[in-house]
Length: 334
Image (cartoon, helix red, strand yellow):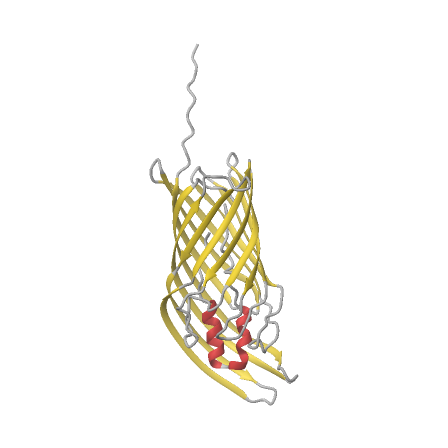
């Protein structure tokens, strides 16, 4: 699972520090990081232990005016400018069971990500009476993300592969309400969904799509709870040789219920994002027992609503058990 937690809570805390009544901008940040899944997502793997490292660079920028209705019915607006950057190196382990579960292949993964986050924000809150509150703040911090866990169950029928999954986080003590830069969320989240991969090893055609729903608990520090999110990640590629494939990746993200909690004073702030980018992957033979996989992909938001515009680069390297060699049948000579 290619996922790391980055500037979500940095954006949340940054807005709340400048204007307490404007914290609903936190509703534009989700537990789920679009682009987490990609090509070969539902394809079964060789049972055993696998180790992965994921370098993730994320750049987020926002500068927009959002009108809102205050709790007493008066009208106001908030103008927010955000520039945030995150570099994280996620490390994770996965165990895939050799014993079938419900006729499928079960696996469990754990991942955490040390990294560096930098954030700068300027905010102006205009109230119904025309009064304004303005400010600028910056922060830079090297810290550690929450621990993430994921369980998957995959089935294979020839070129068709299906998957169900669940992923969540264990909130860590590194979240700091008084800092703009956090790699941890400060709240719990859980995401579940289904996936499909078409993989024809004869033609080299591959297509994967994964859809899911995300539920977040309330952030006790901000008294703010994000709404339920729907996301769709996809990847399409062509194997140009036995060990190399190239293609495209993309995502669609849509918040489907309103934010809530005492801190959600600016309305629903339902977020949306559509992203697209290129990818290339390499299968690297290491030995008879192990193989490596290197994947490089990048995304750029084509459209956003109530979310910062981002571009992200993912570099994933994983080591896992190599598939058994196919024995060569001897040729019978007359």
